[in-house]
Image: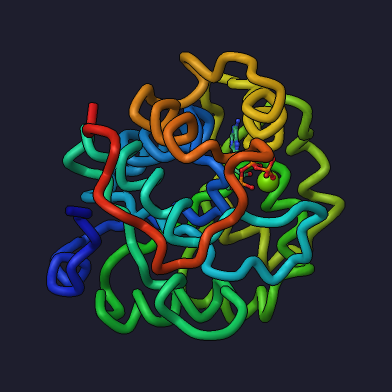
Length: 229
Ligand code: ATP
Ligand code: MG
């Protein structure tokens, strides 16, 4: 079924990107950010890492990890340089980026380039993450532009040593958020062209973000009702 980043493959990269997120659901904003980063930084691959348990308390019930992960699998299937990863889903406890990056750095070895890709909103909050300095010792950051979030604030918000590890990357602006996709799905509005069609179909098939799609147990994933497109 799913293509999950085999550990051996991670070890073969000279330059790797990590795109982390709740991905509830994944959308074109995430995919454009990852692809632009891959091209501009000549990354061999980008690993998409859905959070198992987001450490920052969310103000809505987060969809079970297996469902979010399946959507990531569907969304990245058409790009051979994109790989979904279960690394955070399979690790018990809250999902901290520093643990994920340390784990991946361990497999890559010290010489490979490792970049953590974030949007403007996420990088501006990096000081609230667990051990940001230690995180910045294991990887650099690619901070992509995002409509509504001003990266010019970065200089005043972050200390110099962290700033030195951050590369700002201008990407085509997509004013798309998972919050907006959840809202649309909840009221029956179209998600078309905001996320890959296979994800649109998955959300509809499971009734996600509607009253009908109550969060299911992680084991409650039957055969895929949707094909990969
Ligand atoms: P939510 O609305 O639930 O917070 P989101 O759209 O922000 O969802 P996340 O899973 O929170 O998606 O984001 C994962 C990463 O992708 C973050 O680093 C975020 O900044 C980045 N990102 C999300 N959407 C965009 C976008 N439209 N453009 C650029 N970066 C984005
Ligand atoms: Mg977000």
